[in-house]
Length: 440
Image (tube, rainbow, N blue to C red; front, side, top):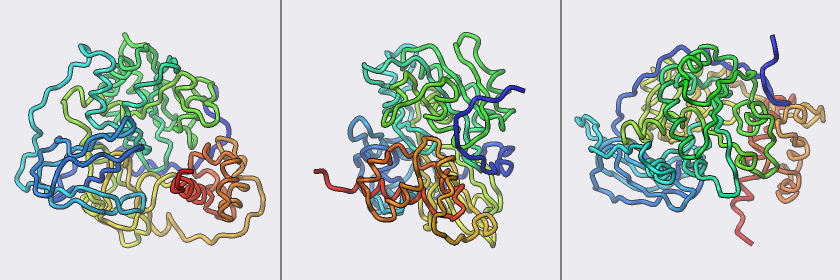
């Protein structure tokens, strides 16, 4: 059997997807309150448009995009603005957020709105509709989708890559989207090809999802130049640079973006969401979230209003087990551990993983033994051992000289380190310190 396309290096963690891979997507009941931070995406936070006491309907814009690399925020439930102020954010800070007291007896039907006919719109008008709907990447980074669909004139795009890898352990929301909403995914691909003015698309899916591969191949429209490719199941196969290398054998240069090599990469959930915008006219106000791990009683895949608090999400999933130890927003490799149950689900929250004590045992850190495992695992060929030493000495500028900014914070180095050194966390700390520096 021929080897599946992949990239050099990387790791093979236990995927633990059996907890929810067969769990159909179900809708979560509307909570009594939703909390919507203005910072839910890469780029500038949205600009507030409402005041305390205002009544909003589901889908109403409550904060507008502040610049090109920004995204509006919409009310995910009908209700009354109860407060505006600092609120616990998955990034560990307190960020400005809008608290909406949800109307108890509302049917939660959005206002009537015009559903744009993308086939009659220009490329620019279609992209503008995506931006107005607040669509961002749903794979975790939450990069505004309209930015990727508007490449600069000097970048000639020839291929749309649809990322169906979902290589993070535990998470299965993208898997279920491909199984249950394949036609919507293909509609989203049509719309994105229209936006980009190209004809070619490739869907990449890891080989540990054979049912999704079969469904996506059988549902592929005959009139589209599209191919469904099977990839080796390896982490981080779903990272943009790794996906491009595996499927097209193109290397994104250091410091460059996929557009430099003629490619736009979109997560399969984002593609389906774009289709939904043009099917219903409703902006991004809900998303599919995997709630999983042995620390939660009823793992599953839920359609969740954006802004749902962690405590409500966990309660609908049967509550925490007695040995629940750690809660992570995202997957265990790149996700962020959270301690406050009032932390809300964001647009980019692909999963909530609740680890038991046996899944997240305490680990003692030891000195580096210079074994080289981290160098072998790094998918972008950095020297994590050297960067780790610099990070512990807070020598940030030297870390930049050693290509810190090429680090994806994928966690491969931390995963393989026999000394349990939290290398990826150190690199994230260094990047944060550099961002917070005042401009020269």
